[in-house]
Amino acid sequence: MSIIRILITLVLFAGVVLAFNRKANPAITLMMAGILSLLVGGIVNGYNPLGARTTGFLLFDIFEYFRASSVVDTIARTGVRTMAILAYVAYMDHIKASTLFALVVSKPILNIKNKYILAGTIYLLTILLILVIPNGTGRIALLLGTVYPVMLACGITKATAAVAIFAGAMNGWGPANAKIPVAANFMGIEVNMAEYFLTIEWMWDIVAFASAIAVFIISSKYFDKKENAEKGEGVFSGVTVESLNVPKWYFVLPMIPIIFIILFSGTIKAFPTLAIETVMFMCFVFVYLLIVLTSKEKLKAWNDGNLFFISQGNTLGRIVSIIIAGSLFGAGITSIGGVNALLQPFLSAEGATTSTALFIIITAIISVAVSVIAVSDYVANSIIGPVYTAYAAATGLNVNGFLLLTVNTYQMGIGYSPATAHVAMVSETAQVPINTIIKRAIAPIAAAIIVYIIGTIVMV
Image 1 (tube, one colour):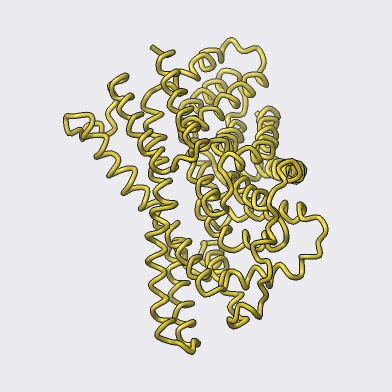
Image 2 (cartoon, helix red, strand yellow):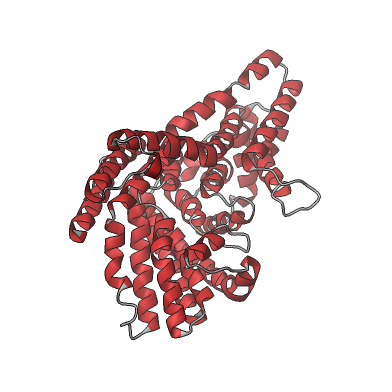
């Protein structure tokens, strides 16, 4: 029966990948695959997504789960934030502030000969922004609206610019990283987040970031040459600051949300802690009123504000729909039980493993594969976390050292999955195929994962 579960899981996952290769719409593909997966999980395992709240009929339960968990919960958790960010970005595009920002910021750095060093710097910026924007889709959305146009204006290819933002956003680190208590909970341990970061993680983070960025720079240069990738400067060809015919002070407007997010992130005690979507709504209202007050065509400027709501609807259809469908697919794949079956041979081998290093390497590789198929790091954490705890107890190793894997590696492994909202969002906005982004992200993400595997071997 385990073999059947594994085969069904792999077939469904392969079907999604094949559909993406043929340019099928990601949202509808993931939604239909998710419904089918939950239906198969219910038939094969008797799994019910609603549990005790069942309606008494599996098909009804699946659609109720889709409504309550995939749609309502996803929009409440991630959708509103994404819509708020991209609505502000759309408004900036409409008033030409984004283009102005790109032209002004790129001008002093256009003479930098090595554009790949610049791209690597953006990769690092994306990683560092987790300190103030923990949500991956939030970081991606904000950077696509601000930094991405600058990269294009500087002559960086679309694919390289897209991967710098996508791969950088796959990192999860820092003393306030929410993944730490989650991973610790699955391992059945309590951990002081700050102590863990200062005594175990930070040194490996530095090495992982440096390794990933170095590999990214080298591989991007290789792929750009091999693919004869489209240069970015063509996007703004013939466009000048004067030709935009907008006030020059508009160039500061796209950066206002980042400044306010930092101010209200909780790191500065003089300011209250506000949710990112709250900050984005506040920024829009302030900037919008400023535009209306300073505009010569006040009625037009006033009515342009409706773009904020129109763009939220567009974002719901283009981006949030993928996030919703992706969560449904992840739940469906997990319900089949093939992911658990894949790991069973390795879980039962813990007592027979002669080498701790080999045990860590094998479980890391399998868990990354699970993260890719299940489109979730939580699944791998829930399965392998207790195993690490038992292994550490039996061998007298430092159980906290295993958090390097469960916190970082599984999260980064999601970057290899074509079924994530992250890659779909970048692909949709940057107009770079999903497969191209993943192909280019494989090497830099792998470089960081290898560092964390080595770090785990050393720290346990």
